[in-house]
Image 1: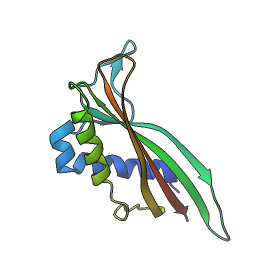
Image 2: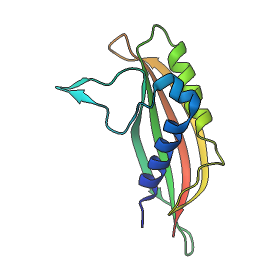
Image 3: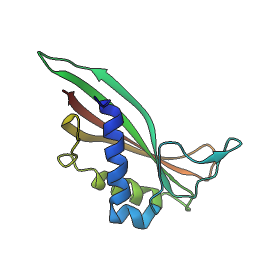
Image 4: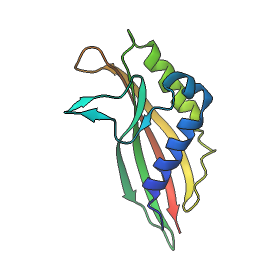
Length: 139
């Protein structure tokens, strides 16, 4: 039996890496663990990474259900917010609310909830924080 969050994240990563629009923007740079050395990010910008996630049990009669909240982060060092906004939009479009199929679990719903775009404290990094919510049933 596969963890619902683990399977969903893997499927999302595959969809993001396969999307042609995102490929042109981030060149396949989708990370669970962002490359770094001595506490400094060594990944080439721009890129997408997985942020925190929550998995809340929501069982019903004979059904193991999970409400999953997942954050996907967009990172850019281009001047201003335009590049970050384009990537955020491409991520949202690459993850259709009705087109994510899981092999072991059943994805009941998947929704984009909010995107926030802001300047990171370093003053040079644009950061897009996207929140997605899903409901998954585990057999």
